[in-house]
Image (cartoon, rainbow, N blue to C red):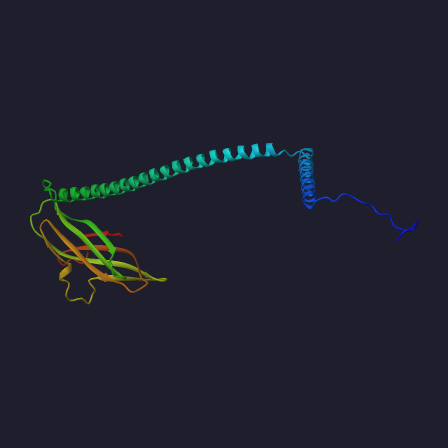
Length: 239
């Protein structure tokens, strides 16, 4: 269109496309640099410094490494102390066992000494009967008990001691109390309870009780000859 009403037309020099792309890239880099500068300025303005943060992280890393080394050292010391405590505990247990064994041996020696002292003649003292090592213990089988004792004749032993023994066992089942006699009154064969010795005689045997029955005490009675009254009575040690 020609004339006054025709639109204006401008003629410009053509710009190659690569220059346009280069300009856009440069503009983008400038915008990124500006944004990074503004970001760093904002962090500093807010009180955050990346270099200080990196330095603090490095310091904490070093401190953490030192703490880990200290923990490892303390763990090693603790393990060593635990081993020493185990060794000391084992040594203590061994000592306790040795002391117990020596105590039992000493008690046995005292019993042996007392036994042999009863066998030694003592002037014109009239002879008598003594009960030694009277023990009652629960046997391996449930409800079965084993007893044993040693009878000795003391003083002058001008003749053999002849007689018999009787055991009286006090039992309790629930709230009921009963008495068991050994040998039983109707037992015609009581050879295991007869006595005939000059120096000493061992007496031992077993008896059974009903399930749930508790042996409260046991007593031995020593009769001389056909006597009806016991010459000696003694209670047992239950174990």
